[in-house]
Length: 180
Image 1 (cartoon, rainbow, N blue to C red):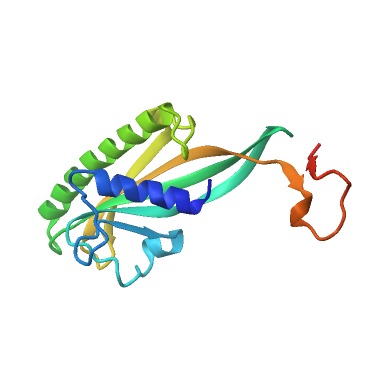
Image 2 (image 1 turned 180 degrees about the vertical axis):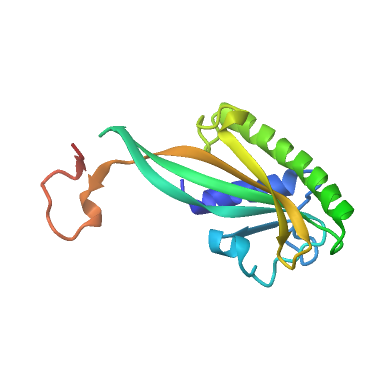
């Protein structure tokens, strides 16, 4: 599994959610991706949805092991569900927060169900609502976006063998070597 699989998965959620209805057409976009630096800094110029949008945040990965044969990539991931509101309007901001929180919970429920079913990306690594955290976010983008930042972790297995075909020097005569 790689980052493009994660981005594709998050995009599929935006395409299939009835309120997001993402399409890859100008003016119909409801899915974007960004890295953590962009989250609170200057957004890329193309990110200007006027409705509700899902923004996938590129994950941070850490390797862990219970044994030399069981290596996992623990991926700290996140997404935003945001909406545009009228500037300097607390009531409009609260309305967007209520609407986007409902969508966040719908997305979380789907992710849990898919993980419990052994989804190829998520495996069975997300088992309950306890695996998610979310917090409100204000004044994003041009200052007129609000919504929820959701964080979660999913784990994927990692091959722990050294495959000699990727190396120019001769480590050993075996084609595949296991790390002890």
